[in-house]
Amino acid sequence: MIGRAGAARSRLACDESGSTLLLTIGYCVLGLAIVLVVASATTLYLERKRLFTLADGAALAAAESWQLDAVRIDGDRLAIELDDADVQRAAVEYLGGAASGLDDIELVRAASDDGRSATVTLRSVWRAPIDTPLVPVAVPIEVTVTARSVFH
Image (tube, rainbow, N blue to C red; front, side):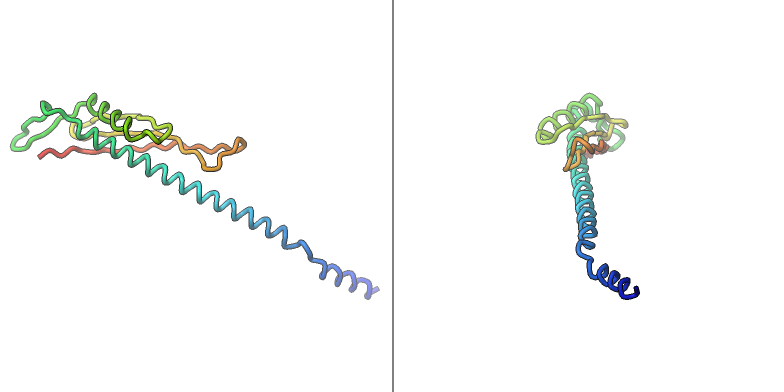
């Protein structure tokens, strides 16, 4: 009896073919998931930086949108007064030329709160690089930039 049990254990111990295959498949799936997450996070970061750069340029163009008749003398300094309509127009013009290759860019706000600086807010939607009908991934991105015109 002991001989048969020992032989059965010996046979089971030697018959381990395929036992690492499942483990290998599991690690490959895990590795691919990690690569997908890192690639998606990288594209999200780059899309946000691209939107931020676009908003920065629009805010700078809007901050420089003052008219010569808006310049006033404040003591011994010259000061400018930005108009909300001029800020909006300058931001829209800048975005019309600069955002030609980008999709779904929305100008949320372009205004001058204090009359000396221009604030521009842009919104876009980031889509995952591997977008499937079963798991569509989209994240809204919104950036706000303020630029001030310096007049000497």
